Length: 448
Image (cartoon, rainbow, N blue to C red):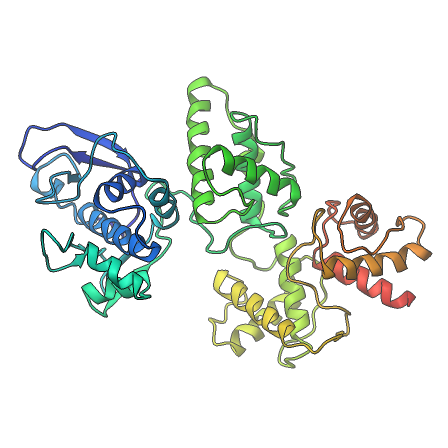
């Protein structure tokens, strides 16, 4: 038995009672849950009722897998399709779109008792023809129509000591969803990874536009590639890499890698290289360090316990000391390194500080950075602000092209940003990150 539950890529289903001579079929775990849910419940039920039922089905199935219920009894399968024992599973059964979308979103979530490790063996029945000591499917519809959420429905039937485990790791070591959707303006290791994988997938699906994977910024080019991918694989084409899109990209990427192994096509080093780290520490560099330093520097204007630090993109001793101070102030483990917990806490406090600023506030380094990269295709007040400062710089610096402050990040704005990046000696990607933002604001203020 594994130390902690993981989500299997595939599950073997026995098409009959446990001790019958029926056939075994091995199917993808997500396809199994979609099939079961489409067999057991109705796609026009309220969304929260659907989610509650699907979570119960996922948890029951994972309990069977985690406890090795059938293998420990000498069987060569994980679960049966006999409803006296397990779920209804129909080979080649119809799968409803509504249910498929929900499963893609929550397939690696499950419920368990507080303090327990194993997923709950969540029994359920229709509640009309049959009754049981678990979730009543039609009863869950009534509760959803009364405004109950999925977890409230589950606690109604299984008890208040039920907790939801989200984003459980996959058995095949697929990189887990980061917990925050990636969209235009996002940056970092996860963006770089998705861009690399989309670029590799494009070789097998040429309808996906070419993607520039030389940077770790989620730009408009990345957004269009994501939209094309989503259209091909029947996902909502919003250009945002949420949980369902994340795992679908991982699934298809794994598939094209397997194909390349069969055809000796091979992969290139950039396709598997991880440029950034999931933990930032002394000696690291890159856009994630730039953002970290900016957040800490900005917070330092309001919290004197944080020492002032320069925004260089290099994690030096000054940055480490600021991290020490922040971790101490916020009750985090004082390590001097920045794991996801520390990073998200810093980012959250920065956004809260910016949200509380009075109108027209300027810090010692000018307008507060919006907390995301500005890229070509963006629109809005933040773009207009940076354009105004770029226009000031262009009046005295012939290397920076003039532009109109219209709030639309177009090609001319991108050229102006690249000119600033050339002078700074940083990556010339045309996107405005923390280093570019501070440089443009400070230079613009000096001109007046």
